[in-house]
Amino acid sequence: MSGKIIAGLIVVISLIAGAAIYYLQVYHFYEPVKATGTDDVQLTLMVTGAPEPILYEDFEAINADSSPIRYRACFTTQQSLAMMSETYEPYDGAEPLVAPGWFKCFDAKEIGRALESGDAIAFLGEENIEYGIDRVIAVLPDGRGFAWQQINHCGEVVFDGQPAPA
Image (cartoon, rainbow, N blue to C red; front, side, top):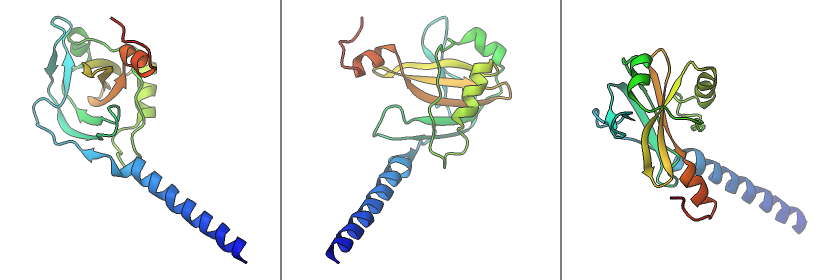
């Protein structure tokens, strides 16, 4: 009889721990980002290499202190992709990271498909927003834009435990 009780307790404790881990990963650490309304979306100029705010509306973002790559944002812009691609630095190797399911405006699969097909263009938002982490901005032809933070080449090397490249 006591074996059944112990097994039952192990199952209950495992379920509680699993639910707690799920809640912590998906909900607890994320917080809404308070928009300034002027410089929440920045792209790096080709000419100067400096980030510059762009025109945007409907900004919505989340972030977490627990990881530098948990930032996700959605916005709309009236700026054309043609003008943006002539003005701002493109970002090669952009890979949108999956957002929590409850953050409905950010669909990493849709963004990834649009980037692969060439419908969307990825731009460098800000290089080394934190060491080894770049902010990437992707814009679709309909003006919907998305932002996330991605580990860059230097970050990959350092996070693997190797010395930082030059």
